[in-house]
Length: 418
Image 1 (cartoon, helix red, strand yellow):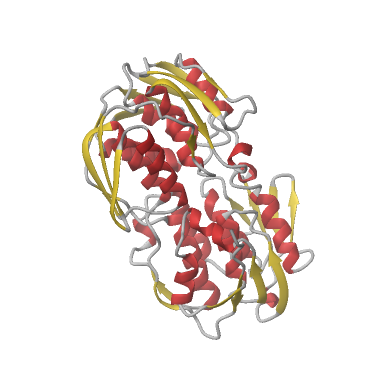
Image 2: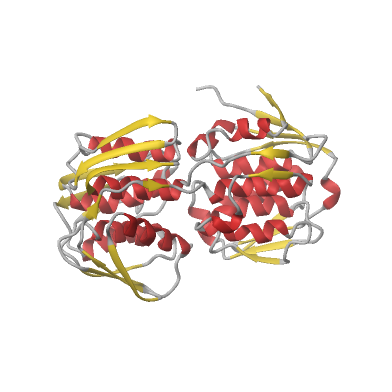
């Protein structure tokens, strides 16, 4: 496949107009799985159709669930509450949500299931989830600590107590929560310590479970109890993606424009929406930003910080090193490509030197996206103020925001492709 390379031409005017972000990836993949575990037909509207969600949908089809796509933002899911053993390994690309969620859900299958992904996914940790399944009596192997993982499904989860180290990802907890709701006995899930990556995503999971008839109780800050109620088919409206919205919020403040997203920031339930206030504070962003609970918004804020009035330090972002790529390294190395000394790493912190004088300059820089959609989309923002910013592997935005370049063009941004 030919690499897509895009150079952004800084607009000569503020960006104005309407630009609706796509549906939430996080909620779409949760809803797809829960609908698949339910009896009956569920209609998911406002859904995201992207690489990550299409991998999830296809994997569910391979396990005997009917997943139809009547239009560009709808999935119709019909199942009988059972996942069947697929005839081949489930391939999930670099979709972290789909891989983690299905690793737990395949414990409900009667038989062995291999969950695998691409070369990038094979570097993303899954060991803590494998260990949690073992505590529930389900054998699973991931020899490298990353996919592929082989799950020896036993047709259900018997329940009991499971402890999970969620320091690397909240997705381990979400995966067990959702699978436990379709189990045979009550399950109590307890954190090892209280550290958890992006705790707000657990709230998304609990809300999605409730929408499909699941019952989970928060016992304390580190413990949840899930009843084996099973799930009931439901029609579910999926809100727009807050992580995608961050690029539009940043484009608005960078250019002094007014972009109507069709939904106010306060209406989002996703954790990344809390970045709105930080973005809105530009060009006087805080000197220290804790990114632990809005991790996917950090690339957006880091590129924005390059134009801030004063330097910005990003803390609580160690987990970004095990995302689609090492995002801390990707951010620092690409910012330095724009101007030497613009950023550096201190341990797992990212320090952006900030220079409002960058705006209006011509600083030719080829940005390595590392096949990471968030790196590609965030560095496109630099191209709104600096001439010569080129994004390599620009097609990787298809992972969560396939129309990203079209949306920018629709706002009046000129893009040169080669």
